[in-house]
Length: 129
Image (cartoon, rainbow, N blue to C red):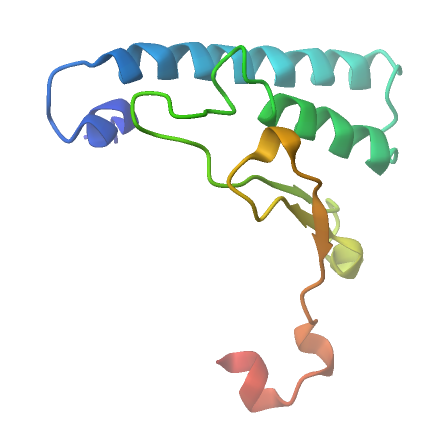
């Protein structure tokens, strides 16, 4: 059958307050993404405006009111956030940008850019491993 992510997170246990909160998180995330998609569609945000796209994704991940960014919620806290901006064309892959908070409080921590080496310049055996 289909994977039931909610049931998997519960470990087969009855619904908890945390699970009720996670549904709010899901809806809030959908709201952030729907608003961004609408802004892209209507030209208020350009697809190539990586700065604005990253800022919008970061704002969604830092949304504490919606429970996306969690602090001690039901004995669980966010441990970091990641935003990756990946170009749609494979030949543009080297321009992908990956940003991480690398800290236990994504709401108040700056995102830092990480670069991953390209397999194109690596020896054949290193790229395969």
